[in-house]
Length: 333
Ligand SMILES: Nc1ncnc2c1ncn2[C@@H]1O[C@H](COP(=O)(O)OP(=O)(O)OP(=O)(O)O)[C@@H](O)[C@H]1O
Image 1 (tube, rainbow, N blue to C red):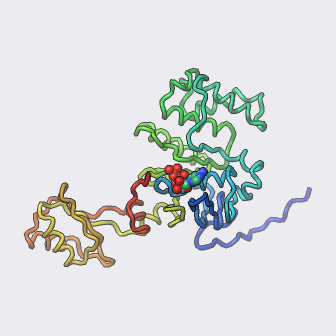
Image 2 (cartoon, rainbow, N blue to C red; image 1 turned 180 degrees about the vertical axis):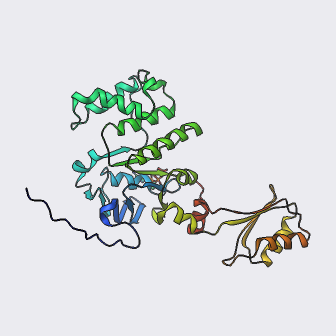
Image 3 (cartoon, rainbow, N blue to C red; image 1 turned 90 degrees about the vertical axis):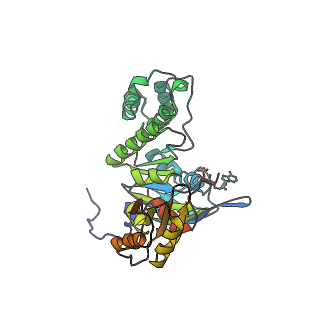
């Protein structure tokens, strides 16, 4: 039998990112125009295989529209998208069986049990083998921790349980890629923790997970990589560590003398100073060559500023977002 010749030629990484073969989602100039709204504008996205990729942006920034194009549910106005190396929507039939997707909440029948919902999903899949159906449904329920509630009607499930059942439906078949649109939306902190734990476990098993969120701390907690969207445009993408390292971190001083503190800090090169009159906290951006923090603190005290707390806050993705867009990460409705 003839084998393709072995080759050790690996395509050169472009711009420090993974070679093409290791990218599960790639878009070029992807755009979607609705009447009067450019929902997605010239998107170049690269999602490395094996990553937990956070697709981050305030409400209305174009995340769902992008996901719908990636899943072949709507046609782009311009540009192209490849998922698992194949063009979308053209190759939907070949690609979608390898992708588990949960978009805008699971569509469940409330009057059916969790188990019966999954049996129904599975029988609607023409590629699913009916002989192994019961086993696969049981395994999916077990995977998301719903075995004990399998016989309960879905309408009696909590929101978190419904979301987990939705995830189970995406896990009935082995998947190379999971696409989750705002998987923790509306969940309480416990429900969020459960979903985050599940996402981590799935990633450990080798599934690439692409999840959208408008919650920065969620992305920081669970994702290895992220892309930041604002108003339909990609602001940046990379590893979460790289994104957060793009900002220097903010100095924070708590004091009953904020006006004086602002003056002293300004003299020492601290910029973008903000004083919160309610908490007495003064924050600011340290200069590129930061002053010695011990001396800075001493300068405040010498100038008569009473210092309750003093420190540098670790740069977060939120800082990165604010630095990149010049706007706060407020959910824009
Ligand atoms: N079917 C549609 N027709 C017209 N405009 C739309 C349609 N779908 C989305 N939009 C608009 O496109 C923009 C992007 O919406 P999209 O839902 O993709 O954002 P999002 O980041 O996913 O936000 P959310 O988290 O609120 O869903 C918004 O201004 C929205 O109003």
